[in-house]
Image 1 (cartoon, rainbow, N blue to C red):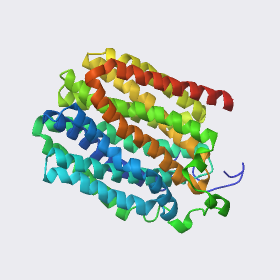
Image 2: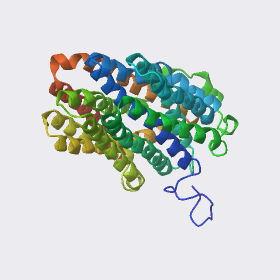
Image 3: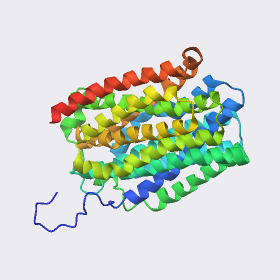
Image 4: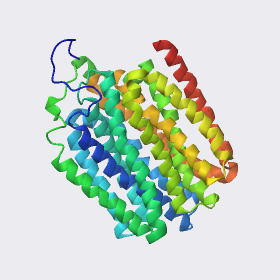
Length: 405
């Protein structure tokens, strides 16, 4: 930041830096294909008679390839820059989203999950990497605001995608719902290949790592940093809560006799909560340190997972889903800002890949576990078990709050 009294062309931290409007639209349109396709595919799998276990497998496939490739993807971004990676990811999302439109079946939906999952993972990681360096990259307030603005695209698509898919399924069927969400990928394609060239830096413009940093670039080198380990574990508990709600909603909704439109509305209420918290992120960045926001997020997550399995009324379910979305959405930009600050600049993509790796572990394993366990345990023990895990994350966040005071 320039010193006081010195004129500068640097915009205020809260104003959208050059690449952010395009990055927001790219995130929004590509994620619409994922959020709408995920709801459509899970309901189609359940209604086709494949069963809850296969619905869980379908949900887990979105994160299966990213689980295996996130670390390499992060290093790839560090090496070649965000724009090229985003272009490759967009092509994968496009191919996956259109596949079940042309051939609607459970196998084609599983293939869609694999392609859209890895494609959006690349788009999302590259977008976050580009947003971290937009504007005054040295300012933690600027980074947090950037991540909040970028998260609005995700939150908007997560709100619109399931609601739109649910309404279209009830009115016109699964194929039309998948067609409409797949059409959004054409906008992504246009934006990525025509609008990002001048605003996202090429590899030669990125800071080069020092030799001492290049010498050891293994996974365990990053994990030796205690604050980074703490961040990753707390972030994992929040990601697990997010995954659990998304995974269990179609199953719980089907068990309670909810229509596709109602399931989509509940999912959209959850995403609307994320949107609200992301919209407030630039304001909260001024008032509260990151760890305070993470702690507040975990308090809300614990409370919502205690209450959710006790609810049967659709209206109350919608309210609790909204509040859970607010709680989860509050944490992610703050976790990303803390992660960026705790990692050498030349390895930020790799650290981001490590975070995505852990999140994708949750996204792969939890659908398989809960898809098989719900028939034996029921909903309440699973939700309360997650509340306990989030409570452990809350204790860790409280320690961090005390440390930064």
